[in-house]
Length: 274
Image (tube, rainbow, N blue to C red; front, side):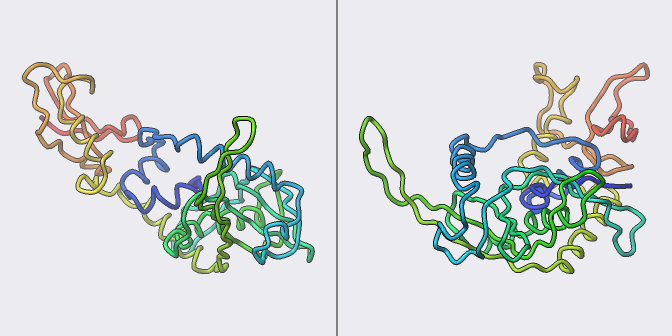
């Protein structure tokens, strides 16, 4: 197998629920979409538009000297071979912005509208490492920028508001530069753990901590095709897990009566008698 890994999915989705992560990467089954609040996308877009083409020194935060050059570009890496695994993986995603530094190297940066914290820096470092490795080890025809010498996050924390003229309002906040120390060995070890998880049987649903696992289990316990339950239908019955992939199952009707069918069908054809 050659798994496609999104840098963003290596953060919250991987840490949030291993079951949902495997369903997304391995079977293309996504969690129901909850889009980010549009205001955060708007702020990020305005930042990238404003800083593109400007010197990094404009922020006065001690960033390495260079020019914000590449904004919102797609990257795709070659397949990475990992120890003790016949499977490979590749990175596919889109970064926020890259600065071309005066020394001939590059800095991969992410804008975040949030208060900085060590936990956020550690979490988002996976994204930055993924982008850096993809830029330095691109698939044929993909964007190549090398070497990447700096990784970091630019946090914007709004803390003041004032009225402007002509019906305008000004939002002020502190910008904080948080450098991420590059450690390719540790990140490749993390990728090896990810691929090992994907090669193994699907983890059991995390119904105690993941709302979407709980939702799918409750949906699977209903009769019919997953729509609204009919009068008197059970909604609290625990559905079994698939004997083949350990994914969620749903109750279906066939020529020989009711049976449990894997919700990963047709990728998985596991069944159980009802």
